[in-house]
Image (cartoon, rainbow, N blue to C red; front, side, top):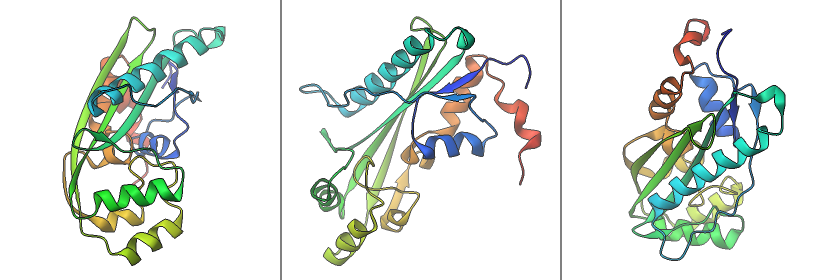
Length: 208
């Protein structure tokens, strides 16, 4: 893939990296960013996802601006928000947070918003956002307790990972499955192509 721009993934998520690799894209560098992810007062879930994805992109762009060898690189960032109505669920870090999320999600539908941004500079950032509806079955206390014991929920938006054990909780999904995992591949590939990154160039070498 000579002649293409360097691609920087502004994320520490192994799931986002694995999803990109699934479609033949290996970022040249990983540049995770640290930003305050607390929602602003009255902020809607969709707005929060867009704001955080753009902030992560801009922070990464400023950081690579201090590295001359990365000049002209394309930065890709993303953020995922899980919500029930207007209520934004946390990225669970404690058992109490995860338990509260699972009890709230049990037997009902929720929405997952993933925003993605790609840019060469803060003035040249493109963005997309996806909304996926997910319905959980009613979870028993034993199921919740056992899931909490797995530790799979830690650091996950809404306190669950759909690509893991929690996939068995899902009754219905309307939208993008990969968006719920953390990166909507249809939108991400279109965004990268639109920014001049040759997504399809590597497909012939992807092992089946």
